[in-house]
View (spheres, helix red, strand yellow):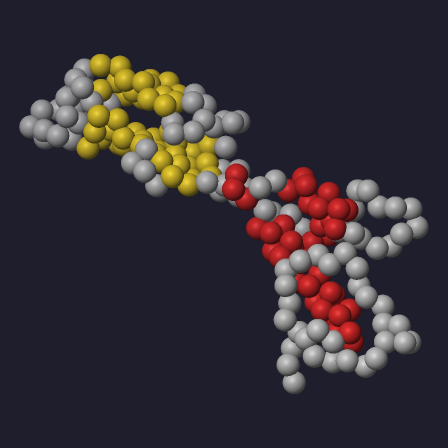
Length: 182
């Protein structure tokens, strides 16, 4: 016994068998047309639920259809897509694994990191790879010494949604930073 091969599509109609239809089985047989349409819709809905779950939504929210026709219990593809439109796009989450990089998490938290090369005793501004939208929880700076025979220190001056200012003291030192925000 073979199973129906599903396709992740929303079939607009589910065929109703008529009393005059001949009995025909097989992949393209008329008796399997409605089953295949329902199987396709089920696979499509499963993919939408998975997508919704990845984006932090709930299955209940998925079925709250905005533009339903009065008295019509059926949910069509346009209504389903409309209900999903508020979810956004998974491509909004992003990652850059460069030396100055970032990672956006699905809950809105953003982690960013980078390196500032010191050019002596100076104030140095740097920008994050991407701007934070709402706030910065923490910015930490650590130093990688070039010459351990002389003392050196760093001082975090200011930070904002777009970058920070540090004071460096020895040329050749590297200042690694990590920022957490949303």
